[in-house]
Length: 112
Image 1 (cartoon, one colour):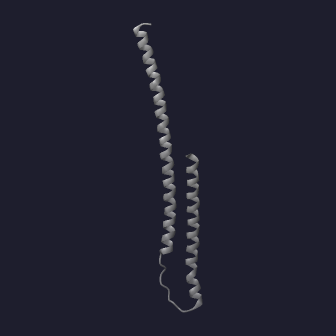
Image 2 (image 1 turned 90 degrees about the vertical axis):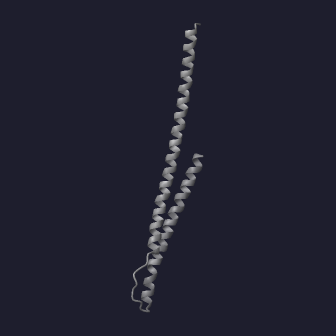
Image 3 (image 1 turned 135 degrees about the vertical axis):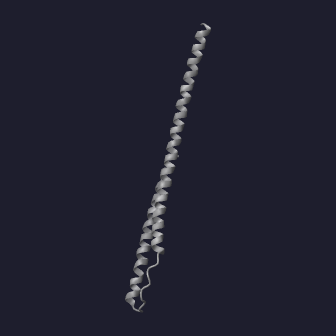
């Protein structure tokens, strides 16, 4: 085998090694991009849930305008309705957050 032929074979072998390395690097880059995309989706989901929670919290903490206070049972019962509704909304949001976090943790354990 001539020097030129052996050099050609060496270059072909090196080219094949470089091609294999490029494919491995490309796969690693795709895996990393998918991992980052998954984390961004999770962060977006958490941010969305936090926004809902903040909205509910602002509704709960918002003060109602003062009404003339007459010492009757009808006004007292009427004042409890927004608190009950706020508590139910808070429970609904809390349950939603719980199920969302549980789902994300389940998905995370499946991929690991």
